[in-house]
Length: 81
Image (cartoon, rainbow, N blue to C red; front, top):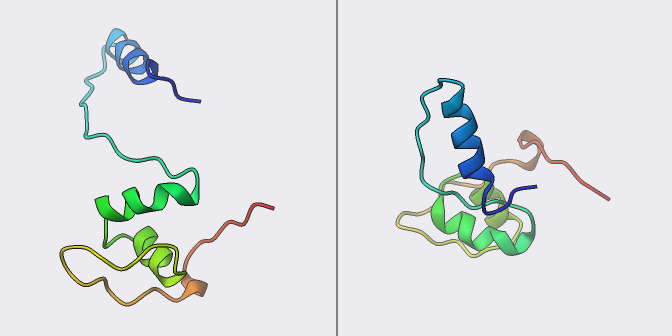
C-alpha cells in the first residue's frame, strides 16, 4: 500500500543503488468506479475510457470524439466477486 512517503523512499533507495531515476507526472490510481471520471478526463482515448463509456459508467467527453467502443470480447476483464 502506498503512503505519502512511498515515492520519495523508493526514489532515494534507487538512487542509493546508483540508478538514474526520472520523475514522471502523477497519474490517477483506479481503485473504484468513483476514480473513473478523473481517469477518463486524463486519458479520454484510452481503452479504459472507451470501456467505461461503453458500459455507461462515464459520459463521453473530451477534446475529440472517442473511437468506437472496443468489442467486450477483445478486452481483458477481471471480475472480482
